[in-house]
Image (cartoon, rainbow, N blue to C red; front, side, top):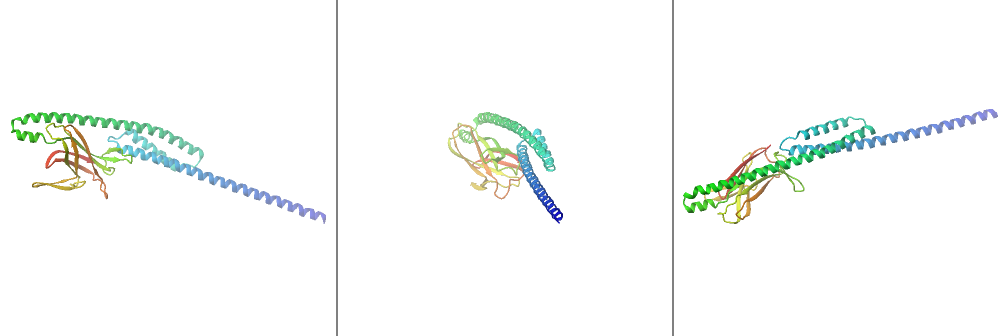
Length: 295
């Protein structure tokens, strides 16, 4: 009888030990599973962050490429490498080793981008300097032309000579689309959809015979569909009616005066693609014309 009781006691103790071992194993397994889930969640979050950083870098390259007048092959190739890395990251396994490898590649590409964009800005600056130098040369040629013209009209009646020679003239008329940053910085662009404004610049040439003081010229910007942009207001001169985009008002002091005016984008649409025409009028007299194209 006593042996039977001892046997039952031993069985109970054994079962108790098995229960404790089972519960301990279940607890440990549950803990390992929770840690695995947390690690996978952390790796996925970091993977998404790296993907977001690469996507932002790609957008910076796209913007730099779009703003370049001449396609920069170094920027294009770097953009392609970023796309390849993004495609690879999408299908990569979620592991610490893999993620660290992609982070190192991203940091290397970040350093490369800083160098490439700095060089791209330098090249744009040089191009703008060359354009400014060309405008300066055109102004000098225009001044010489005006001087020569004034000599040729000496044989006409004096009153006619004085009236014609005293009229304001413009040179270097230029139009372009511009992207306007929130900082106020303006970047020239040939793309219609990216243009926030149309910029019209010209130089009122020096004329010692003209009377100084407050002056105004009428600027007319015509889009590819033959619409007059801007204010599209009218003014009548005798039997002639002029539709103009804006009135450029300035104080003239008998010397070269650089002027830039702007046409804002329409509220409900972008600028049209195609060739634009610019005309500048002194009263009803057309004194300069130019064209430019937005793609």
